[in-house]
Length: 435
Image (cartoon, rainbow, N blue to C red; front, top):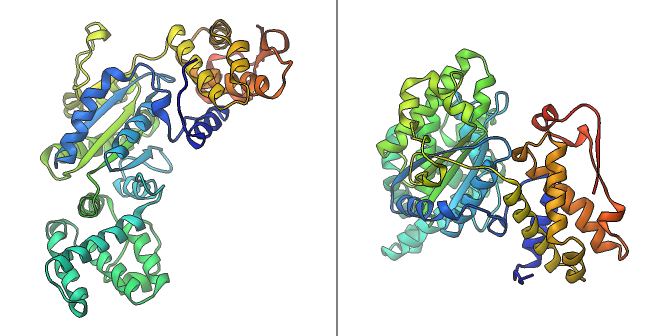
């Protein structure tokens, strides 16, 4: 086993998430298997966004192919370039795509940077005011004139935004006024309104000079304003991930059509240059991109996402507007398991024993067994395989000196530990497999 030289905190975060059956929020570069083919193209796109451009990308893959992993892995790469990142789960009830005000709200709630976890909206706004003060001082503003100088700079920086969303600039000024006046309650309420939250107290809205709640069209202007604030506060761009867009296929036809048109509108706005510094990524299943209940339902959207996947997957173009994840094979699943085993062993008091007892052959056997319990569907197996590997096997080897998984462990997959998609593949009864 080659030493991985990973910090204890990063290792723990990754292992704990896998033990829960979840995709880790960080440390994904430690687990990236088969994504190196995308690195060059994605890094070039991030650089283009950092230079003031806009990029749209669609990622397709079946359940279990690693779409969420891919988006979070890209998010880590973006944060290393000093991007802000927001991952939004599209949902019929919580975050319907045809209501962009809810998408913007979730975006601000999930906004994170390399320095601050979600929600980092307040830290970003405060950093912007600090940057404006520094610029004003550098321009020769005296201390007693600093407030007025910052106001002038703020108006100049938000001039373009004010044409489309004047209430964004008004709310920002209202927030700063409340902060300078020591009125924390009003400042917090105005910031919530700025983040798209509904039902903000009328008194706070009056203090900021704004009215009502954010609507679908106002959300685009607010997003434009947020990009301006991010850029001026030192961030090179914003990566927005719209995950699980395929849920649109399950909503009412009228809502689905509105959502597909909203997606088309977002893509066009990115390409038109309205959102400089934004990288918009969506994820979905092949059925969403190719089926009549998804993208194909709106021909203009289908045209924008059209990509040739008829050639051998080895020659897929990672620069294309739509890329596909190949999913797992037994070999790649085993390779990932070995990577996790090595990562776990490095943090164990007896890493040699962990690596010896859970050797490569056993990892391969476990991968085959979990896949077999799921009807041979390798693509559905990764989450459950890693959960079983960490929680049922590696933890026991690490804690019990006489534990041998080949003698003392019997794989059991119960319906209660499966997701809805996994449960549809497995029979109603538990499946016991001896290893």
